[in-house]
Length: 129
Image 1 (cartoon, helix red, strand yellow):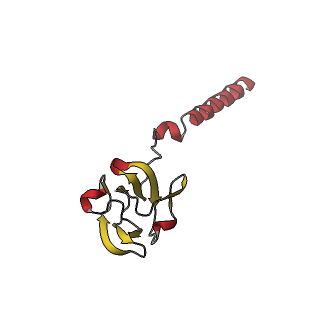
Image 2: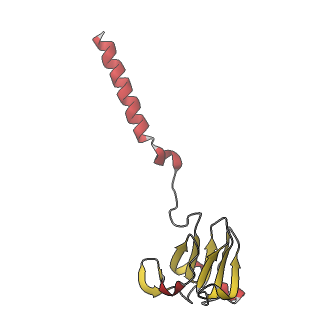
Image 3: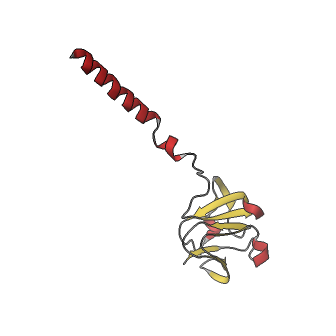
């Protein structure tokens, strides 16, 4: 009887250890934590290079925003490319308060060069629709 109990305990312990080693990370694979859905990304340079910033909602005045991890490097009038990973259209406006010439970034789209749309280094407002 003691031998059966010992074998049963050993099997349960092996099953538990096996379940731990095959946890969620092994089943899920590698996750890219860079670009995440649900965010609008703005980039300092063409082709999504240089400083970056992400937005989850409207920001009517970019004059007090810095590139992620780069305090003092202001975003205002310095956006050159964008990725819209949201389910919403996002507008960039030339002036704070969301006035002036608009640029539309449709949901789930990207634009690697805002110069093609006459918005290169002009955006001062991000508005989610």
